[in-house]
Length: 168
Image 1 (cartoon, one colour):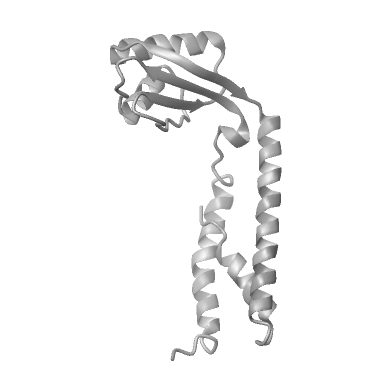
Image 2 (cartoon, rainbow, N blue to C red):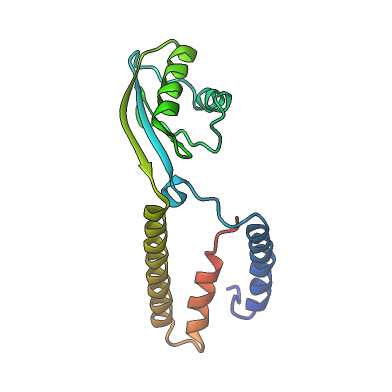
């Protein structure tokens, strides 16, 4: 049997070697990259009449040609695209749809268009943070209880949570 507890300091060191550069990169790059759900923006759901969705990369290229950057374009079905972008006004949205129709030679129907404000994003962020905190405390409590026979079981629960920190 491998003596994992006897080599725990090596594992702690290995974790630090991975965690610290991730934290440094995250701090120097301005934090976590947030989508419009957190920082605000527009969500445009469109449907192509032909039933064929163009490639996501082609749509992003067309958006870039219009000066719309920092976009996400996930597909939801065979003929539906969702375009998440910084705030779009009505004129920009109309121009965007007409340019996409010309570029892909297809008729486009707007299924949904929403603007998400940063205040809603702040609420989502705070609730997500609260959910993460509650889950982390639950994991610590469970590990502490499950390993209650081991000295300093709380430390192992805390180490498990720290190891789950995203690495940017």
